[in-house]
Image (tube, rainbow, N blue to C red; front, side, top):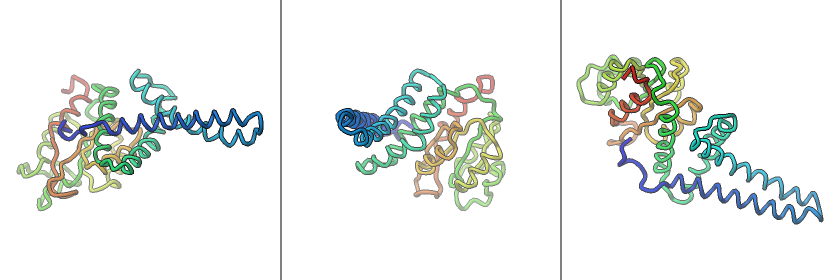
Length: 255
């Protein structure tokens, strides 16, 4: 993903921090009211204490996730917090961003940027070629090509009209598996059959975000394709970004 495609402001980070602080404030307010009610009515205090505890957990788990990332700590708390963030907290941030009239695509790009940094830091130079899968959308191939590569990218004749021939070279040069998919169902089947340890995925922002959620906890480096003719029609991608991700993930003796 080129720097030019990155959001100018870290909106996702702003909402992440603001939401966490807001939940902590709600937890503090609920706790304060619960303490005030406790001497008069335990049941009334409980009505305030339970939501306060829920709000506290909702804020605590993202904080644990963030601190563990920064400190490079991996334990049960981290993986539980990671699952919570991916399944619940991040979708909530995207929902709030839309309500605040922030372009969802900008938020997704920022989220994918953070995800890519984490995956490279965690899994960089650790994979053998057979453990890595490059997953491409079928729309990278020009629509009127007679040599469809959905079932086998090796069918590409290298005419140069689209970027598929670059991926044929990357597959041969690095020995990694490359597959194209026509949609999420086929992509999930490919992943089940290939059983990779990591994926470099090319997709539009919508499909890339849903793919990250669907494949979790499998590490995925996302690269956005370029929609020159609208979604799903003759798209393109910066193949150097894909190749760069491959080189960063593979063990050094393979690059």
